Image (cartoon, rainbow, N blue to C red; front, side):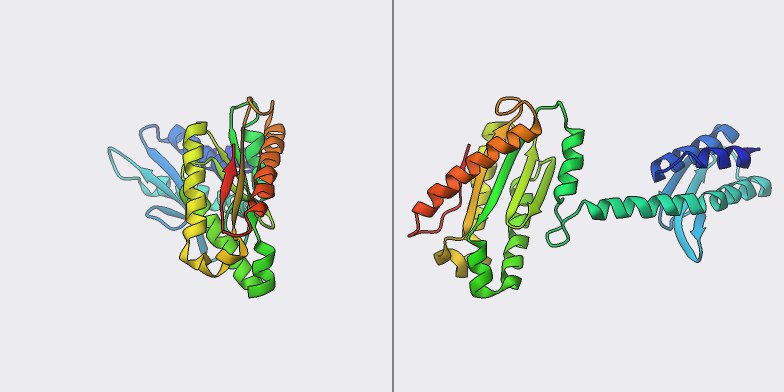
Length: 259
């Protein structure tokens, strides 16, 4: 009967979290004093195998007495029953995560930004739009590998400077976006720290004469836009304003921001 109930419930479960909850509910209903945890990977407990691979483990603790053979057999049957659905759900979640990640930098990509924007709908959020200056010159003079390496360094500096951000994203090319719930004063400090990291990074020393740097625009909802799309547009305009000013200082490398 327990396995029949599990089979029916598994037909509606599409995520590893839902399957984990099903297993926990089923076993604790049968053994009320037990602690149950379904964890991905191999751990101490009853393995959930898909083919020859242990994809998860059911860990059950009994506070009073060890399980008898029938009880262990039931838990093993549960592990066998969830094997296929759990593997399918896990593969789907991995694919979804990978689809939302920029392969070069490891940051979120445009899809990741869209997912985060949906979660933040209606909530106040600050947005920093970042554009890398003179990346094309690096590609033309030092090759695309050097340009890619510079983008990877930019991504690392973004993560370091905006360490408490809700999202750091590479939109594509040389454009990045940060979502943050920090106040504007904190963000201005983080932007200054970021631009210093970019300018004074020893790896960027060969590019200083090429005006390598970063232009940033900051906007906040609902002050600068009723929603994230409007605020991003505002931040984008401010970024391009500073980028235009950047080009007028052709005699020195600069990373700057406008807020």
